[in-house]
Image (cartoon, rainbow, N blue to C red; front, side, top):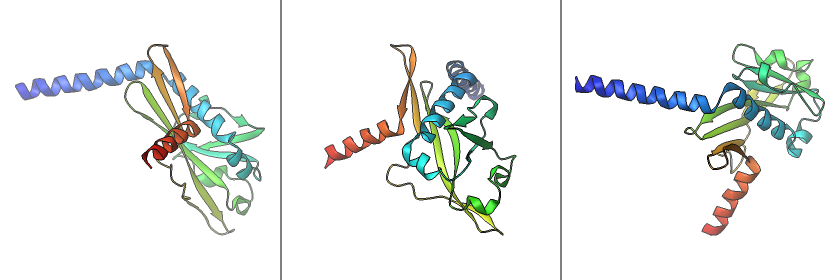
Length: 178
C-alpha cells in the first residue's frame, strides 16, 4: 500500500512539474525561441559566407515548421523531418549540394526556467550517384547550446543568451583557471 501511494505521489508530482513547465513555455513561446535562434544562427557571418553558394537553407526539426520563419536574407528555409527524406529538400541537381551544410535543430528543457536550443551541422557529400551526410568536427565548445533562454522571475521575462555570449563566459572561466 505504501509503495502504491509513493508511486502515485511521484506520478502526480512528475505530471504537475510537466504541467507547470508547459504552462510557462507554450508552443507559441517555444516557436518564438526557435525563430530567434534560427534568425541569429543564419545571420552569423561565418554561416552566411559558408552558405552563400546555395539558394536555400536546409534545417531538420521535429518542431512544427508552420510556426517557423520561412526566409532569412532573401533565402527560403527548407524544413524537413524524419517523415521527409533530406534529398527532397536539396537544390537541383543533387550534385550541386556537394560540401554544403545541412542543419538540424532541437530543444531541451533544463528545469521549468531554462530552455536550450541546439543547432548542429552536417556536411553533404554528393557525387552524382550517392548523397550522404557526415558530422563535421565543431571544435572546443560543441557542448554549448546554440541558444539558451532563462526565465528571470524578478523581471518576469525570458532572457536570451547566444552561443557567442556563452562561449565568451567559458573562455573567461578557462583564462581564470590558468
